[in-house]
Structures are given as C-alpha cells and as structure tokens.
Length: 204
Length: 165
Image (cartoon, rainbow over all chains, first blue to last red; front, top):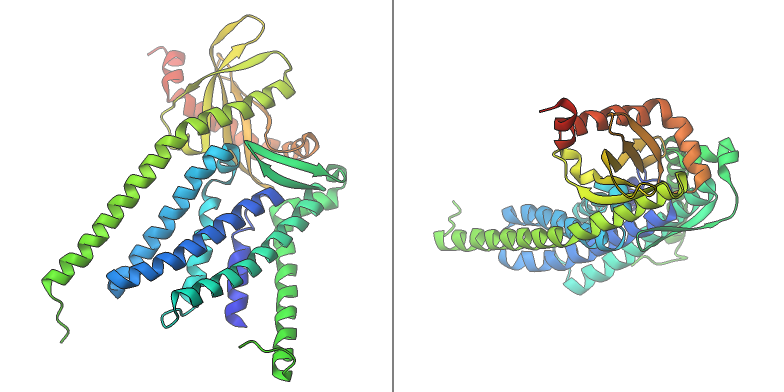
C-alpha cells in the first residue's frame, strides 16, 4: 500500500504547480507515459552492457534526454504551452524516476516489467486526468483540450464571477484539492486491502 | 578483492561516452529544428492578444534576439503599426512566462520607444479569467516583470540606443 500511495503522490506532485487546465493534464500524462515506457525499454538494454555503477547515471541522463526530446517535439505542436509549462515538462521524468526506484524490477523479464508499468501507469494517468478534469471544471468552469498552437475550451459557466470557484484555479486551491484526492485514494486502498484479506479479490 | 579488467572498463565507459554523444547530438538537432516553430508559434499568440486588446492598431514584426538567460522563457518581436505602415522605432512586443498565484502564465508586454513597459494581457485563457488573474497580480508579479523587462531590454541592443552608446 505504501508503495502504491507514494507512486500516486509522486504522480500527483507533478500536477500541483501546473495551471489547473485539463489540456495541460493531458499533455503531462502523455509525457509521463512516454517517459515511463521508454525508461522500461532502455533499462533492459542498459542492464546488458553497463555495470551497476553506471546504470543509475545512464538512466538519469536518459530520462533528462527523453524529456528534452519530448519538449522539442511539443514545440512543433504547442509552442505556447511549452513556454507556459517551462520546467514543469520535466516533472514527469522525476515522477518516473521515483516510481522506478520504488519498484524492484531486477528479477522480472522485459515483458513483465512493461506490462506492470503500463498497468500502473494507466491507473495513475487516469487518476491524474480526473484530478485535472475537476480542477478545470471547478476553477475555470470549462473543459480545455490542447490544439495546434494553443488550447480549445468548452465553457460551462463563468467562474470569474464566483470568487470561491476562482480559489480552486489557484495554487493554494490545488493543494486543498490534492489533499482531498490523496485522502480518497488512501480510503480506496484501504478498502482494496480489506477485500484482499477477506479473499474477495486476488492481487496475485 | 574484486578485480575489473582494463578492457572491460574501457568498453563500459566507451559505450557510455558514445551513448552520451549520441544523445547530445539528437537533442542538438531537435532543439535547432524546433527554433523556427517556437518563434512563429509565439508570434501568432502575441498577434492574437494584440488584436484582442488594440483591434487593427498593431502588427507583429520580426523576431528580436536579446542577450538574456530569459531567452528560453520569452520571445521578443518588433512592433509594427498597422496605421502608419512600417516598424515603429524602437518599440517591441514580448511574450514571457510569469509566475502568478494561478500558476505560470504567458504574458504579453509592449516596450515603447521611451523605455516604458505596458502589460497587455495573458494568452491561452478566456478574457474573464485573464481579467481576474490580472486584478490579483497587477501590483505584484505584473509590476515586477514590467521593471525586469525594462532592465533586461536596457541591457540589450535596445538599451544601447536608449543610452546613446
């Protein structure tokens, strides 16, 4: 449970300093998954030719390089979003690094590691997208999606006239929302644990 | 005692150096290729904000390179007048990432020929929310960046003409 919780918090942390738009959530989740999958594939290659001392250095250099590469590609599509997010585009690499350190994948095969990462990455991505979805609705009263050279909005109501709603668009409001999200996640994990102990579901 | 053969050591570090060089070259290529998209994409955003605030008054000119570490979080252009046709003397429009209580926002500023800097608005956000963020940040972040941009441009080519050397 602790590992799952830490991995979830690590994923959530990359979203806290980001403006509360669903569009940025989509972009960061895509970056997160790309970095996670490429890290898993590359780790398999690195293990074959590099000794243990070099592995961590190579992996750190690789994660940074992949992030810079994805940033470069993103500039072709969404230059203004890249300008706005700045260093925040490198946060998914940090989350992946934390998750990678927590999970011991030494003895598993590439396929097993890949499947595990895709499964856990999808779960965290879904939770992250839900988090950004609610931030966008509550804070900005709309749903935004990334389009070429900017973002498109589907507006539901004007939050600028409701000061309480504007609070959720701000960073302090995001911290409140993220705390609520962590509490809900802990509650869900506890319920799953109880069900596992009772034999209702099998985690193996 | 663990002994590592020199051959194995050279092999490991050789592969590591080749890997680092390869990555560096790939990043260099992608950075150089994306430069044009960066300049043109941000120019469109600046033009949109200017058109919303001053309809038909300004057009955005050529990209201006300025000597600052903020180059990676900003982009500067000549400001042209739509009315008089041609570049306004020593006037610039700049898009820059500024940190507000709502997170980082791309803000557009105009730097006039007399050295004064005016905030125009935020991009990628609706007008209502832009006004809301502006009202919260006007006396703090926006004001700070006005002074910072002025200082930054005074230390660049623009500043030389202002100072007369």
